[in-house]
Image (cartoon, rainbow, N blue to C red; front, side, top):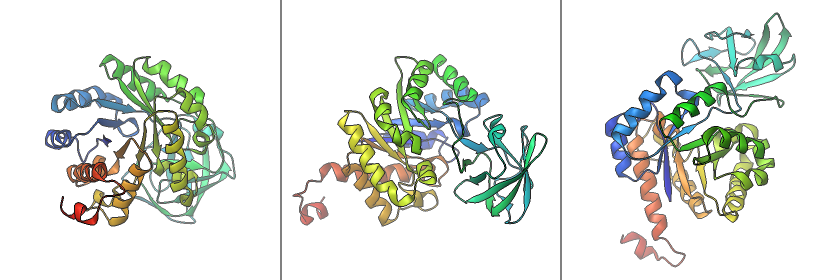
Length: 335
């Protein structure tokens, strides 16, 4: 069973990376949604100075995101009116900009946009010259670069310009592991393969209704699959996620391919030193379903206890590997 770990501000230092390496991490992930192109080569060099564990570059992919904000806790109040701009700018409580570039050209009066998991919800009520006016239907907090959803499908390129540049840097530095966010169809697999090269190992992330509906075609072409339960739960009712997870794992393993599960595995450990009982049970149940490995994201990228989170996953995998249906209570307690 493999452990995949996302690196970020909470873990990007030598001591933490070396300790996580000792715990048997299989792959360190860099999320290009939160990594500057200008810093990428330096970051890769630093990580390679700390560990021999391979690095994976995860694309931004086909996703709507708001741009940079004045602070990481800008408050929006229901009833307020804001301007959605067509040119890059720093957002505040009265102004927003969305990526990828020019995506606002697809917006229409009547569209509703939900930003991040805080459920700030906007409705476009007026189109202006290069901008839109929106009303805040539900208030909340928005930080920089948060995922957003429109209440209808719009067109995205499977890779952004930033993704292409990051992949080019990665290939030049002999990175051989990549992940494609929002793989929505089999054709996206071919696009990523052409960008990364025939010798790369590519994980394709399933995190949208389109990806679910086109899963069979994606599986025929993909190397490996990752179920991102977080982004998926913004587009699919959360009560369906456990059953979709089971079906994706079953279908992927039937093709003889690896499948990993990410998001909210040990979410409590972002701020506390121990997980809760439901999280522990979820992680083990995911292994019992046939997952090839578990992915830590926020727990290690921004969490206070990244090493402890990896240690907990390692301990759960160790217990799982000893378990059989005939294991007695005494055998468990005496380990």
